[in-house]
Figure 1: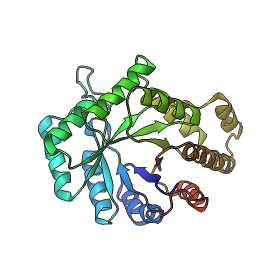
Figure 2 (figure 1 turned 120 degrees about the horizontal axis):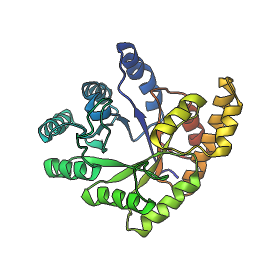
Figure 3 (figure 1 turned 180 degrees about the horizontal axis):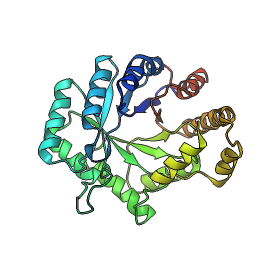
Length: 283
């Protein structure tokens, strides 16, 4: 179990106070768990580009390996080329390449570039300098025409030069393992890391899940809704549920876990410490 990889995702804080908390409190606490790297998200259409670059620079200076998220959005090749060169000059060696989304209010005529095209562009510009992760969807991307078509799209990302994939979060281990079977049958042999979303607030989770197409199983939805405004009960149940999900995934052969932290150390750190106590993610 000691070879399984651990990583975390942050978003670029919008305020100085949020940035200070992330760099001086949250990051050091999570760094103690010895992750392989942390990633930093990139807003729709590059809307958080400057904040992303600044947050990446802060984390890089701390000594933690960091992977910026990257998407073309509405940016030109020249803009993307300059950003890649900037990351290379900083000493960044890992990226998360995504199709991304158009910013709110953007016209429908603007074209997004598929992640496979972005991966190919990165490889053409920087050869093998970067380790590249891409997104995968065990419950299938909301815009995918069919299950198989979505897996074929993932394969195109790997064929373009991606090294590994990180999944959208999910709450059914069976969905992940069935997805892996389909990927394997279609010739995908690169690591696919499960994305893990802690459960701390039912309303927020329900909203996030509607927006990104992640499925909350009916029984779980009813269970969480039944706690009402009792946030302590939601957090306690959520921590136990996510811990069990992580154990099942790792015992079933998942190559590691990627936690969506929402820029909070808890409950992620408690879950990871318990996993380490049980023998996962040995330092």
